[in-house]
Image (tube, rainbow, N blue to C red):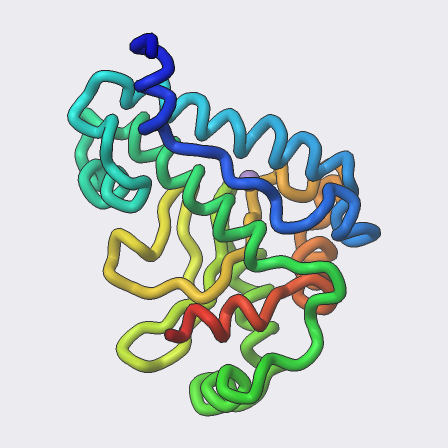
Length: 206
Ligand code: MN
């Protein structure tokens, strides 16, 4: 077995999309998916594998790479690519065809206890998405047994703060520009109404 072959076994993989590339239409087009998954997400994974080859990070899990490089000025490129690889996999799973609607009972109860009502939770997610200046992510998280909405800039993620993410929405322009141009609110509201995967969020409650 060649060295290249051995190395490829321990590299970070691009997970398959959990649905076909036109499954989220008409909210997110197959064209957007082809660039977002096929170029952006794949690009982060490919860059990361180049950056970690033959380093102390080569055999670490993605999560370990993220926590080991977070906040370290000389490891920014590795952190950014690792975090973006993780964030995108989490984002694809935060969406599903025929999503939206009512969360499973256990999650709905928790949402009502934390926000008062599901609509308030959705509105907080949309407001945070609009308030994020430039590229980033909005998250529904579990923090000290309470659900909260948080936003992060660029590649940043709740994982590094010890907060448990339940779901995320990508608000980088590449997530919506082909379908919505500058109308971020239209993208976010359509995702919340028609694609958001409350089942995934409920699973993450643990
Ligand atoms: Mn993205």
